[in-house]
Length: 534
Image 1 (tube, rainbow, N blue to C red):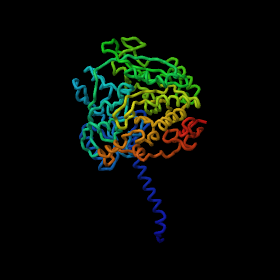
Image 2 (spheres, rainbow, N blue to C red):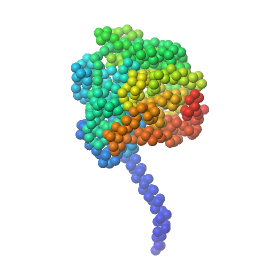
Image 3 (cartoon, rainbow, N blue to C red):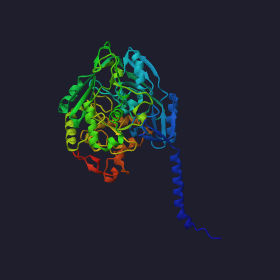
Image 4 (cartoon, rainbow, N blue to C red):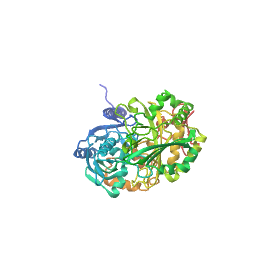
């Protein structure tokens, strides 16, 4: 009988441990639930997906996360409408769904307030308020979002006459904090929480300010962009709501504005932009599959030129002139689509980037973007560079925190697999220019991780005050995740294969950009690092 040598056992033991560890990790990964956002562009890996029907259920879930030392993130609809990694817990954490909490609890017409649970869809809230001759004045473009989710990510409309984020119109928050205890936020704590990213607690009730119902009349004008820098903001300031679509290659911008008119004005028109969405409209009108539109810049620019020339209203005129339709406020400032009929239900996807900057910098920013496109042409065939606005907000980390603000957004049709779209190098330089030169504030519900990683007091003067409240309400970091930790570490995302294509990094080498592309500095903002097709 051969002797078993301990030295041989010592040699194979590390390999045995590695195999066991690998098997355990694979088993754990296999047991995790995939929890996607509504288009599958962000997928959370959770050990549990828990649905809460009561406040007590929320407290139980938070205490479970504390006991098991797991990260917890909340959703107020089953599939989040956010594009941002902010929605996910740490891998293997808990996703808490509070969608069943969707009651409109009370409407106080005299004080003009309404109390709601977090899962209430804004469109449903508006319909109920309208029955009481009231309105919520800052419905986002898409009203199928939940009130708490829209607030948490800073969803907004567009006006220079009022603060435009959903959270700006909250008067009180009731939540379960990171210790499982109930808190009521008002005053400065409320200001800190107006945009909260789910980092302060799990909301179970909100009190909102509302206004008397009113009607809006749509106005539209197409102008040379030689006037944009000087006239864009003064023009927007004249109207209750105003948005601009800028097409630099066509040297044109289009203002879409809504003027408040007396409630007695005839008209029952409504916003139909989601039943005839821009992406589907472009593809239908030009019979172009997305991969073709993304592969050829000349074709993309031709589509943009036709779109500008044939620009039409995104409103269905009812009992009012088609050129200036009139309707109730909630039907004009936002719209929706029935489940199963939306563009994303048809497999149409888009990549969206958005950032905000101080309105005082608008003229300089416009001239920079013009110069960038003079040096490197790029086209915007869907909505152009979509410009929206806000009066100053009292929020701590909202896009309009403390200043009159311009928000710009770029929508790109996206293939099923990430790709470098036509003009993507222009889109990416514009946002890096905005973040770097103009201390831009990325929209919390859009963009990918690299756009957030250098945020701090430079962009948000009350950043440390927000973090102080977070530490008070969540001392164990139950609601933190990798997204927030990367920001706190001011961490540049590590490079992975094709990370510049998936936008998980700002490229540093050609291999980050996949095949047939290379990593280059920006042509105007040379600090930018962007992937450029060869």
